[in-house]
Length: 157
Length: 410
Image (cartoon, rainbow over all chains, first blue to last red; front, side, top):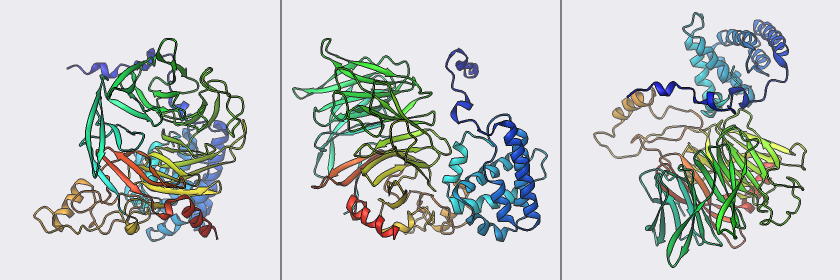
C-alpha cells in the first residue's frame, strides 16, 4: 500500500494552524537582550569555574536560559559554557553540587544535558560519559519527572 | 481495610461513571459499547450493554439525580440515555463538531452538559423542550487545540477545561433560559456565555490532562504532561491569582485528579498509584500514596525503584534470570535492589508492577462519603481494565489532614 499520503501536510489547508511558537509565551527580553545576557552570564560562569566555584558557576548559567526561535547564538554560548563547567567537575563532587540547586535549575540543567547529547557525534569534542554521569546523578535527585519535563517543554534550548 | 479491586475488562477502560447509588457502573471497554455493571456482594455483573455509537466511546457521565447517562465518542456524536420501562433509550445530541468528542460531563444541576472535542470546541448542551431534543452552543475562543478534560463549578455556570494547547481555562457556560443569574464568585460577577474567567499554564508547558474545581469552586487544580500539578487560588475578577502553586513531581505525569476536600486532592496517572496531595494557598505537598500505606517507603518518590521479589523459586523467576531480563528489557545493569531512581514505579522480579494497578490510571473520583460529608473512599480505573475502590485512611480525610498539616508547619 502506498504510504505517500502520510507526507501530505494537511495543515496547509487549514486556516487556523497551531504553530510551535503558539505553545509558549515569547521571551520578554527579546532576541538582542537574550544574546547579550547569555554572553555576560557565560563569561561570569567561566570566571567562577576558574576560581573553583562550581556551584556558583552553575547558578549563574542556569538562571533564565535562552529559549525560542532566533536565539541560536545565545543557546550555543550558554551550552558551551555549561559543558565547560560539567567537564571540570570531579564526579565525586557532582551529587553535592546538584543538591545545592533549586528545582527550576535542576530542570534547566536536565535540558542542557539533553542539548549536550544532541551535539555528540557532530564534531563536538564533548565526552558522552560525562553527560551520562551527570544525568544519572541528576535523576537520582530530581526523579524521572525531570526527564519528562524536558521532553514536554516547548521552550527548546 | 484494603483496596477492593475488580477486573472489569482486559482492555483499557475508556469511560467510567457510577450510577446514583454507586451500585451500578457504566464503563466502556475501549470499544464502541458502554457496559453497565451491577454490584452484587463482591463482584460486578454485566447487566446491560448500550450500543449505538459507531466508534470508540471516549467518555461517559451519569447524572445522579435525574438518572440519565450521556456517552460521547470518536464518531463525533453524543447520546443521552434515559431509563424507560427498564430499557435504556438513546437520544442523539446535535453536537455540530467535525472531530472526535473527547470528554463529557453533566453540570451539577443536570440541566446541561459539556462535551469537549478535537475540533477545538466545547459544546454546551441543553434540552430544547419545544423540539424535544438536545441542542448545543459552542465555546471556540481561545481554544487552540483538542479539549482533553472538563469540570463544572458547583454554581452550574462556570466550566473548567484542560486542552492540548497546554492551557487550562475557566469559561462561563451561562445559557439564557436555563440558568438563573449566578451569584458573584471569585472568578467573576458578569458572566455572559463564553466569558474567559481564567487562563493558566504550567511552568514547563505540557498539555493539560485533567482539571478539577475544589468542592467550593474557589480553587482550580490541574495536572499536566510535564509531571506537574498546579493549584490556582483566584483573587478577584480580572486580577492575577492570589496564589498559583506548581508542584514538580518526581514521577511520571498524572492523568487524573479529584479533590476530596478543600485542602486535599487525589492524583493518579502513569505511575500507576493514586497519591494524596494536601496543602493550602501557602503551598501543596505530596502527603501519601493510597497504594499500600503500610509499606509507604517503596512508594514515596525518593525511595528505591525496584525491590527483590519474594516470589517462589521457579525456572523463570530466579534471580539470575531476572537480572538478565532487566538488563535486556529495561537497560538496567545493576541488580534490582541497587536502583535508586526517584519517582519510578516499583517493579517486582516477576516483571509485574508492585502497585495494584498494572497500567496507567486514567480516572479517579470520590466513591463514598461519610456522615459528615467527608470522602471516605475513592475509586480509580485505568488502562489495565481494573476498577479499584480505595479507602482513605485518617490522614486522607479533611480533618486529619488539616491536623497533620498544622503539625508540619510548626
